[in-house]
Amino acid sequence: MALADAKAGRRNEAGIVAVLGILKQAFGERFQTGESFRAQHAHTTTYIPAQLPDGVVFAETSEDVHAVVRACAEYKVPIIAFGTGSSLEGQVNAPQGGISVDFSRMNRVLEVNAEDLDCTVEPGVTREQLNTYLRDTGLFFPIDPGANASIGGMASTRASGTNAVRYGTMKDNVLAVTAVTANGEEIRTARRAKKSSAGYDLTRLFVGAEGTLGVLTSVTLRLQGIPQKIAGGACAFPNVKAACDAVIMTIQMGIPVARIELLDAVQMRACNLYSGLTYDEQPTLFLEFHGTDETVALQSAQFGEIAAECGGGEFLWTANLEERNRLWKARHDAYWAARALAPELAALSTDVCVPISRLAECVAATQADIEEHGLLAPIVGHAGDGNFHVLALFDDQTPEGIAIIEAFVARLNARALAMDGTCTGEHGVGQGKMLFLEQELGGAVDLMRQVKQALDPDAIFNPGKIFHAN
View 1 (cartoon, rainbow, N blue to C red):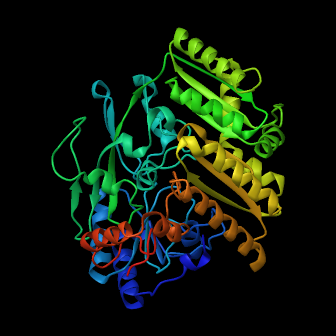
View 2: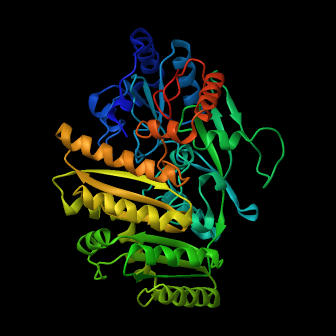
View 3: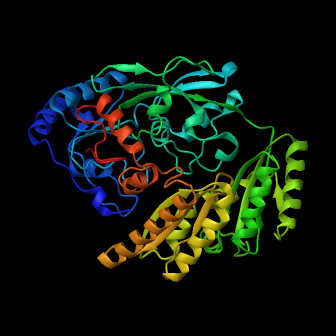
């Protein structure tokens, strides 16, 4: 990571002035240019500096989106889609200025097809809102990145989260999108059929594009039946390798675990302090199983045997809703728990993903790096996917503090790539990981640039993200 990749680009001052006038006339009070509004729509989740847009449109319909895109396309002004602002790599920054399109008012569930296990929603619907809406149907949407992110944002960053080991990521659960492209027209990338061989897979082209190819106006999602029984628990291990060995055995034996999360000893201490838990401060796995009374009991017992074989402690599992919620709320609060260890410091959440067989090696090497350089950096991981996060705490007020953390992130990514992993399992590239994307994919990034040029010749969609233009 380097702050140099978050550099400001050249602004189209005349075009921006023209578009500000057009949008003010078209949207009235739904278009805001005040600094407080603009600051709320820039990136502040990590140490990447906020880069404010010049105006914010609160879109309410797809026609609103068409109008914004047409105006911006005519004057070659950047457009940045904004969901809830929970992205972690500067995806909603406006390095060249431009217009932020806020989708919080496009939050309608358009259609639920319970028999087909799918639904279509507007991009501003959040995952919690959707699951509340679906509750009475016996269905749920399983992707859970932790934050109450918008569906449009989750699709754009190809999000995943704690349930991905069983249910996959957004790329596996988005059936189709509608998107407004650079000519101001709306396209639909697919129908609702469960499979298709009809042409290019445009759905997956837009899923993970981080808003750089067009603006999503609806997303069609695959749904799942709510399990009859859910059980979960935690199990401590003497070291990270033992915990990772248990994960590998669990996956290789085909036990259909729904969640299997790794928290290192530092993170467990943080969670105990922040969430009032009383677990041992050792590397710990949080697990959850979905199924029937019989299957979750069997799967829990099987994991208990694996844990014992790997030197773990007793696996105490429960189906009690209150106890499970307490456990997973602590996991989802890991970021805030880590920050509370040193509230005077800034926090950087970064992630990598490696083949599961290399997870223990990568985590152990990262822990050694943290210790060698005297860093405070708890580790949490979606262990069943080989994906883990480092929540590094550091002094962002000095060049020395920033240089230390940037060097650490560079070593972390180099380590993951050397193991045939990826620079990001779920955070996306944004501004923060452009350098590492080039290292990871080499000439394939040039092909991405060609796709971008073909679909967005004037580079109006979220410029300065994923890669720099040639």
